[in-house]
Amino acid sequence: FNGGAYERPGRHNGIVVRAGRLLMSAVTVRHNKGVGILMGPAAREYAITGCRIADNGTAAILDGDAYAFTSNILARNANPLDDRGGPNKQVSGNVTSSG
Image 1 (cartoon, rainbow, N blue to C red):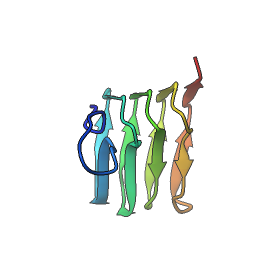
Image 2: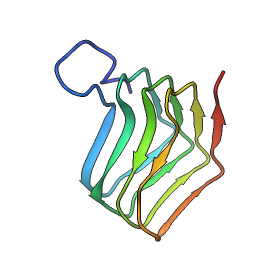
Image 3: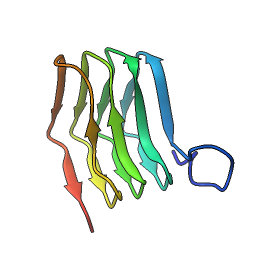
Image 4: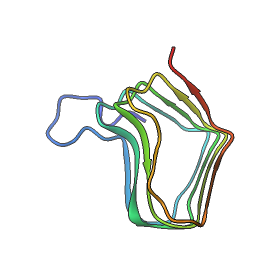
């Protein structure tokens, strides 16, 4: 998914979820000039697992409650993962590569 890769108006983010639930697995999110995955504070009970998040401005910004972000590959992003969420979460087993 690379919706934020093109010269269009906006912030050039890839996947944006402001509220609600999401289950995402085995998706490549790449080449977004802004944030690859942007989860808002009203997002909850979501899981992002086994994804490749590469070559974005920021890999992901996680917010909300009761989520899992596990076993993902974060490669060559200008900025790493930004975890802003509450205490009910599991963020583990992710691999970060700069080259």
